[in-house]
Image 1: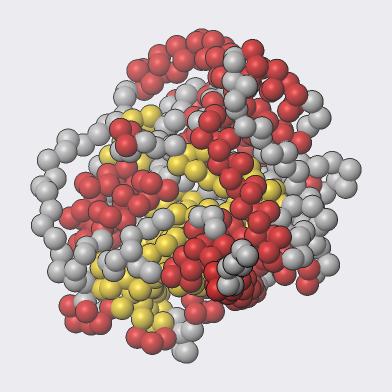
Image 2 (image 1 turned 180 degrees about the horizontal axis):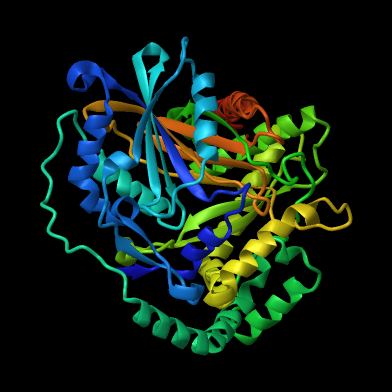
Length: 504
């Protein structure tokens, strides 16, 4: 039994009629190696039944609410847990192409999860062209972060078509505390909250200039420098000031979603990195800058300044990798979509990401975790929901800017070898994340797997009806950067081939 952290609970509180805070993955598999040549609901149910104890929270545990909402909820094992209640099957009509699958996933992603049982759902999608099958699985962000998602996948996947031997399930069912215990603990925490809140504010003060939106407020940068000086942190890299310009996808979002997915060979990304310098993540961010620049330019919405991008970063270390609760923060980074020249744009993205990463490492990036617990749990849900419901109205006022960031771009490294589920080979895995009025109506998440960089995009359908355009522009960006890489390589070769001057 564990209690939700303040950050976990905020993912619950942030949900509205248009915002559902679950994250998902779309796996494309070759089911020909499954028994009978087909991936079935029965096989998936049996797999979850046998392995749910390896990833108990997201699969077997449900929410236990504290009476009167006085404290954050607890996790407890669902006494009625049955994988059949979470696993479904649908079929695409002919021809079963990738566009039809993306549209079906968008509809699935619009639906909220039932909070009365464990917060996950899995849908097998039959009828995909080329003899393929799709597996869509979503889990609430309150139950899982990126690292825990990877651990959950690892529990379900195998290295070969034959399932591996598993440890026996010897765990005792976790039960939430009784109502009296919940109430007494909640009252005690409420009484102590002013002290905890003051400590959180003090720990956050030196890093206010890292917080998206806050860094653009005049005077914040100077104030944090003064605090850092008082704490003798003069060596702290100065945070880049980010301000989110208006874009077509930074308007109030609706209920409906649009989804697109695609991939790029990882070898090409590494080839570009080798020629132009930087990291794989720098190349990914530069590709996103190119794709978003082209998409915005086509619509006459290209800003004259960088976009402000939120980049999620895991705070898990080796000694707390298995700790419960979300362990994640957010880096605010400028994305140079306003620069026309590809070489200059790449250099700007690389330089900006270098500064942002060095600052994040120096500060530990704990501001999000600290701020999550500043509001008392008894009123946090009500205030968060009021704020989230008020955002669309505020965004409609031309003179008011409530955009801390334009969008979220996430890059998650994955295994570079094939994996199998119920005997089916996983051909690709595309992450589908969440959008909101606060984070923007567009989200790009990247996952590297078995030599491919798999890209999943989710957007508000009213604002970005066809995100497959952005996938096309990402491929344009790859071609653009490969040309730059070839030029850099030939220039280097020419320089090496020049004859040396002989002194006389």
